[in-house]
Length: 171
Image (cartoon, rainbow, N blue to C red; front, side, top):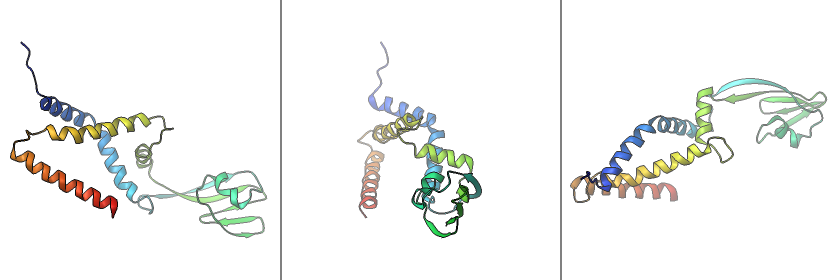
């Protein structure tokens, strides 16, 4: 006769090996999540000079789209030169010169993975990771038997975590 294991046993086994399997991607999400908190600052960013030629005589309102710079605002115009934060655009020649601030290559790739959208090639990885994290949440409640002191103490921590989460969401 075969050995019949409980649901809790299976949950613990899947929780353990899925945790080992996802250790690398969890590290990537943790690091990129921390770095993304500072995305509105220059933390870790490096300046790079860009020389680009686009169509001539682009109206100031459409220059940002042509240069692929979001929220570009032209500060002033002197003759054929349009000045904007960090650069210039020559309306007669179409030559643009500006500075961009970028994350180091590896961190930029990690951030891109963290913020992937449905149009990105690996979006299914984010879905798998999200489902896996949800499994971790659920399987946690099968780690210890409900009648044990450690389970009851865990429920207090769960309640405290839920209250903290609600406070952070609504405050």
